Image 1: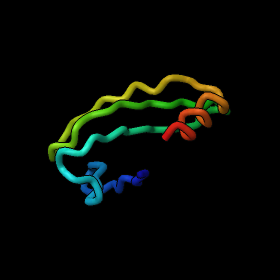
Image 2: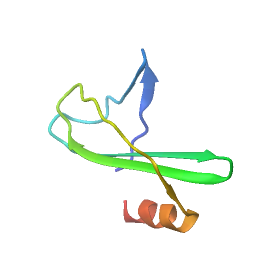
Image 3: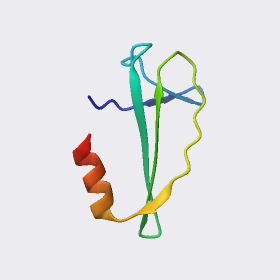
Image 4: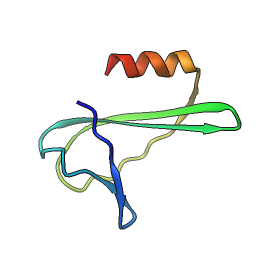
Length: 69
């Protein structure tokens, strides 16, 4: 299941993720024609602080990751 996070009060959040559920967070950005992807997994338990370090990826690498989800 894929869910989009909302940005509210300076935080990303979603009411669609139950506590105790396993979550994979993915960020995708484009900078000057280069693509950067960050990802991490965690077990939802309310307020969580995550640090993502995006790495440069090719379009094919990103596409393959999306297809795995």
